[in-house]
Image 1 (cartoon, rainbow, N blue to C red):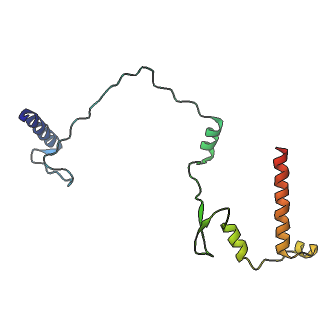
Image 2: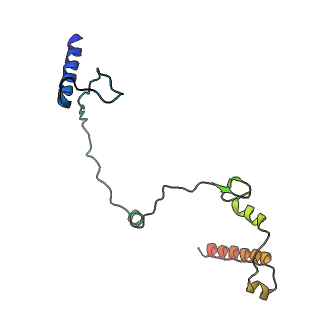
Image 3: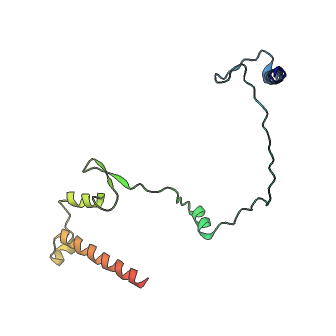
Length: 142
């Protein structure tokens, strides 16, 4: 056992000498003066099959790299709302959009609203209904 420790401390002396003399100071506070840097071990494990080759990129992956699209980052479900001074869902029940609609008590009247004789709020509702119907038609075509 003492031969093992002797070999380790001889290795430490060689490392200290390589760093700059036998009395070289250890500048890092994390290392003690008795620590020894062991050489990196290499373990070769035989494989039954060869290492797989890299697969070629698909069209989508190449396009994503060209355009710089990152699909890993997902948008969070919760969003900060200034009206409630809290985080609320981005969509669905109690969403930001519905809260903003509730707090929007004034809307600019555009010339096409005046021609149709509708107030801006009902005009906006009708536009939403039309958009929904158009979307349903697109879904039926698919």
